[in-house]
Length: 225
Image 1 (cartoon, rainbow, N blue to C red):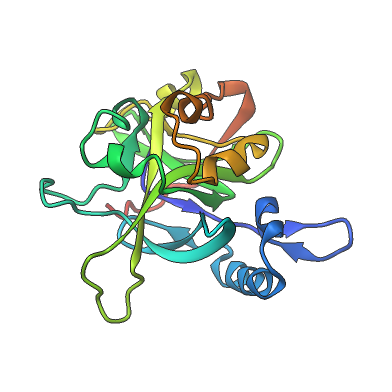
Image 2: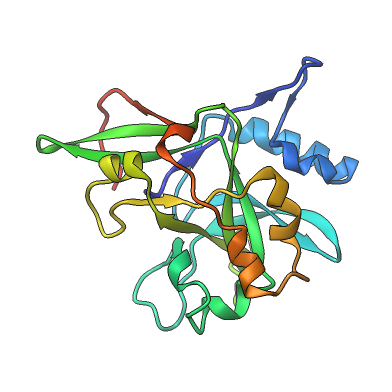
Protein backbone atom coordinates (compact mmCIF):
# COMPACT_ATOMS: atom_id res chain seq x y z
CA UNK A 1 0.00 0.00 0.00
CA UNK A 2 1.25 3.45 -0.83
CA UNK A 3 1.17 6.23 1.69
CA UNK A 4 -1.88 8.21 0.66
CA UNK A 5 -5.59 8.05 1.43
CA UNK A 6 -8.46 10.53 1.53
CA UNK A 7 -12.07 11.28 2.34
CA UNK A 8 -15.35 12.33 0.82
CA UNK A 9 -18.56 13.13 2.66
CA UNK A 10 -21.36 10.56 2.85
CA UNK A 11 -24.77 11.78 1.75
CA UNK A 12 -27.57 10.29 3.86
CA UNK A 13 -31.18 9.77 2.78
CA UNK A 14 -32.34 12.65 4.97
CA UNK A 15 -30.11 15.03 3.01
CA UNK A 16 -27.47 15.44 5.68
CA UNK A 17 -23.80 14.66 5.19
CA UNK A 18 -22.01 12.48 7.66
CA UNK A 19 -18.75 10.71 8.28
CA UNK A 20 -18.39 6.94 8.22
CA UNK A 21 -21.31 4.83 9.46
CA UNK A 22 -19.55 3.12 12.32
CA UNK A 23 -19.09 6.33 14.31
CA UNK A 24 -22.83 6.72 14.79
CA UNK A 25 -22.35 4.94 18.12
CA UNK A 26 -20.38 7.91 19.42
CA UNK A 27 -21.97 10.36 21.81
CA UNK A 28 -23.71 13.41 20.31
CA UNK A 29 -20.87 15.84 21.21
CA UNK A 30 -18.34 13.47 19.64
CA UNK A 31 -20.50 13.04 16.54
CA UNK A 32 -20.66 16.81 16.10
CA UNK A 33 -16.89 16.97 16.40
CA UNK A 34 -16.51 14.18 13.86
CA UNK A 35 -18.81 15.84 11.34
CA UNK A 36 -16.97 19.14 11.67
CA UNK A 37 -13.63 17.37 11.32
CA UNK A 38 -14.69 15.51 8.20
CA UNK A 39 -15.77 18.73 6.50
CA UNK A 40 -12.26 20.03 7.04
CA UNK A 41 -10.70 16.79 5.81
CA UNK A 42 -12.80 16.43 2.66
CA UNK A 43 -10.67 16.17 -0.47
CA UNK A 44 -7.47 16.32 1.58
CA UNK A 45 -4.96 13.47 1.44
CA UNK A 46 -3.47 11.81 4.51
CA UNK A 47 0.21 10.90 4.25
CA UNK A 48 2.87 9.33 6.49
CA UNK A 49 4.08 11.78 9.10
CA UNK A 50 0.82 13.72 8.85
CA UNK A 51 -2.25 13.27 11.00
CA UNK A 52 -5.57 11.50 10.50
CA UNK A 53 -8.48 10.56 12.76
CA UNK A 54 -8.60 7.06 14.21
CA UNK A 55 -11.38 5.26 16.08
CA UNK A 56 -10.56 3.08 19.06
CA UNK A 57 -12.28 1.83 22.21
CA UNK A 58 -11.57 2.90 25.77
CA UNK A 59 -13.62 2.17 28.89
CA UNK A 60 -16.06 0.25 26.67
CA UNK A 61 -16.85 3.39 24.64
CA UNK A 62 -15.84 4.38 21.13
CA UNK A 63 -13.36 7.24 21.02
CA UNK A 64 -11.95 9.34 18.21
CA UNK A 65 -8.48 10.84 18.22
CA UNK A 66 -6.28 12.77 15.86
CA UNK A 67 -3.16 10.65 15.41
CA UNK A 68 0.18 10.78 13.62
CA UNK A 69 0.51 8.25 10.82
CA UNK A 70 3.64 6.32 11.69
CA UNK A 71 5.86 5.41 14.61
CA UNK A 72 9.62 5.01 14.97
CA UNK A 73 10.53 2.31 17.50
CA UNK A 74 14.05 2.44 18.93
CA UNK A 75 15.05 -0.61 16.91
CA UNK A 76 13.85 0.76 13.56
CA UNK A 77 16.07 2.99 11.37
CA UNK A 78 12.99 4.64 9.86
CA UNK A 79 9.38 5.48 10.60
CA UNK A 80 6.95 2.58 10.18
CA UNK A 81 3.51 3.44 8.82
CA UNK A 82 2.37 0.04 7.51
CA UNK A 83 2.44 -3.21 9.48
CA UNK A 84 2.34 -6.64 7.84
CA UNK A 85 -0.39 -8.88 9.29
CA UNK A 86 1.82 -11.92 8.70
CA UNK A 87 4.24 -10.63 11.35
CA UNK A 88 1.70 -9.05 13.67
CA UNK A 89 1.75 -11.67 16.43
CA UNK A 90 5.35 -12.77 15.88
CA UNK A 91 6.92 -9.43 16.69
CA UNK A 92 7.98 -8.48 20.21
CA UNK A 93 6.86 -4.92 19.46
CA UNK A 94 3.57 -5.37 17.58
CA UNK A 95 2.59 -8.57 19.38
CA UNK A 96 2.36 -6.79 22.72
CA UNK A 97 -0.11 -4.16 21.56
CA UNK A 98 -2.06 -5.97 18.84
CA UNK A 99 -4.18 -7.66 21.49
CA UNK A 100 -5.48 -4.49 23.14
CA UNK A 101 -4.67 -1.47 20.94
CA UNK A 102 -6.50 -2.09 17.69
CA UNK A 103 -8.12 0.80 15.85
CA UNK A 104 -9.91 1.69 12.64
CA UNK A 105 -8.79 4.31 10.17
CA UNK A 106 -11.76 5.56 8.11
CA UNK A 107 -11.13 6.49 4.49
CA UNK A 108 -13.10 6.88 1.29
CA UNK A 109 -10.27 5.87 -1.03
CA UNK A 110 -6.52 5.28 -1.18
CA UNK A 111 -3.91 5.76 -3.86
CA UNK A 112 -1.37 3.48 -5.45
CA UNK A 113 1.18 4.17 -8.18
CA UNK A 114 1.72 1.75 -11.08
CA UNK A 115 4.92 1.69 -13.06
CA UNK A 116 4.02 1.85 -16.76
CA UNK A 117 6.57 2.28 -19.55
CA UNK A 118 9.06 4.11 -17.37
CA UNK A 119 6.51 6.40 -15.73
CA UNK A 120 4.28 6.11 -12.68
CA UNK A 121 0.51 6.41 -13.00
CA UNK A 122 -1.54 7.17 -9.91
CA UNK A 123 -4.64 5.03 -9.32
CA UNK A 124 -7.46 5.92 -6.97
CA UNK A 125 -8.78 2.77 -5.28
CA UNK A 126 -12.37 2.66 -4.01
CA UNK A 127 -14.79 -0.03 -2.90
CA UNK A 128 -16.94 -1.11 -5.83
CA UNK A 129 -20.12 -0.55 -3.81
CA UNK A 130 -18.90 2.94 -2.80
CA UNK A 131 -18.93 2.18 0.92
CA UNK A 132 -16.10 3.73 2.92
CA UNK A 133 -13.04 1.78 3.93
CA UNK A 134 -12.45 0.83 7.55
CA UNK A 135 -8.73 0.14 7.55
CA UNK A 136 -7.44 -2.08 10.34
CA UNK A 137 -4.79 -0.39 12.43
CA UNK A 138 -2.71 -0.47 15.57
CA UNK A 139 -2.46 2.59 17.78
CA UNK A 140 -0.20 3.79 20.54
CA UNK A 141 0.84 6.85 22.49
CA UNK A 142 4.15 8.64 22.13
CA UNK A 143 6.38 8.60 25.18
CA UNK A 144 7.47 12.16 24.51
CA UNK A 145 4.85 14.77 23.63
CA UNK A 146 5.80 17.33 21.01
CA UNK A 147 4.11 20.69 21.41
CA UNK A 148 1.37 21.09 18.82
CA UNK A 149 1.42 17.39 17.83
CA UNK A 150 -1.07 14.67 18.80
CA UNK A 151 0.10 12.18 21.40
CA UNK A 152 -1.45 9.27 19.46
CA UNK A 153 0.16 7.41 16.55
CA UNK A 154 -1.13 4.63 14.27
CA UNK A 155 -0.06 2.23 11.56
CA UNK A 156 -2.24 0.54 8.94
CA UNK A 157 -2.19 -3.25 8.60
CA UNK A 158 -1.43 -4.64 5.16
CA UNK A 159 -1.87 -8.05 3.58
CA UNK A 160 -0.97 -9.78 0.33
CA UNK A 161 -2.79 -7.98 -2.45
CA UNK A 162 -5.45 -9.40 -4.73
CA UNK A 163 -4.67 -9.80 -8.44
CA UNK A 164 -5.71 -6.22 -9.28
CA UNK A 165 -3.62 -4.71 -6.49
CA UNK A 166 -0.62 -6.81 -7.48
CA UNK A 167 -0.98 -5.54 -11.05
CA UNK A 168 -1.11 -1.91 -9.91
CA UNK A 169 1.29 -2.03 -6.95
CA UNK A 170 4.09 -3.46 -9.09
CA UNK A 171 7.12 -1.67 -7.62
CA UNK A 172 8.56 -0.65 -4.27
CA UNK A 173 9.48 -2.32 -1.01
CA UNK A 174 5.87 -3.22 -0.21
CA UNK A 175 5.10 -4.37 -3.74
CA UNK A 176 1.81 -6.23 -4.17
CA UNK A 177 0.35 -5.25 -0.79
CA UNK A 178 -3.08 -3.86 0.10
CA UNK A 179 -4.54 -2.35 3.30
CA UNK A 180 -6.65 -4.64 5.47
CA UNK A 181 -10.36 -3.81 5.61
CA UNK A 182 -12.53 -4.69 8.59
CA UNK A 183 -16.08 -5.69 7.69
CA UNK A 184 -18.93 -3.69 9.25
CA UNK A 185 -20.11 -6.82 11.09
CA UNK A 186 -16.68 -7.22 12.72
CA UNK A 187 -16.08 -3.62 13.77
CA UNK A 188 -17.28 -4.08 17.34
CA UNK A 189 -15.08 -7.13 17.88
CA UNK A 190 -12.02 -5.57 16.25
CA UNK A 191 -12.19 -2.51 18.48
CA UNK A 192 -12.89 -4.45 21.69
CA UNK A 193 -9.67 -4.60 23.75
CA UNK A 194 -11.20 -7.41 25.80
CA UNK A 195 -10.87 -9.69 22.75
CA UNK A 196 -7.36 -11.05 23.28
CA UNK A 197 -7.64 -14.48 21.67
CA UNK A 198 -5.20 -14.53 18.77
CA UNK A 199 -7.18 -16.95 16.60
CA UNK A 200 -10.38 -14.94 17.01
CA UNK A 201 -8.57 -11.70 16.16
CA UNK A 202 -7.00 -13.29 13.07
CA UNK A 203 -10.44 -14.38 11.85
CA UNK A 204 -11.44 -10.71 11.68
CA UNK A 205 -8.64 -10.06 9.18
CA UNK A 206 -10.34 -11.11 5.95
CA UNK A 207 -9.12 -10.77 2.36
CA UNK A 208 -11.02 -8.91 -0.37
CA UNK A 209 -10.82 -9.84 -4.04
CA UNK A 210 -10.32 -7.70 -7.14
CA UNK A 211 -14.05 -7.65 -7.94
CA UNK A 212 -14.80 -5.76 -4.72
CA UNK A 213 -12.73 -2.67 -5.61
CA UNK A 214 -12.40 -0.19 -8.47
CA UNK A 215 -9.11 1.31 -9.61
CA UNK A 216 -9.32 4.59 -11.51
CA UNK A 217 -6.27 6.03 -13.26
CA UNK A 218 -5.86 9.74 -12.56
CA UNK A 219 -4.36 12.44 -14.80
CA UNK A 220 -0.58 12.63 -14.73
CA UNK A 221 0.75 14.76 -11.89
CA UNK A 222 4.12 15.27 -10.21
CA UNK A 223 5.16 12.69 -7.65
CA UNK A 224 5.44 13.89 -4.06
CA UNK A 225 7.91 11.26 -2.88
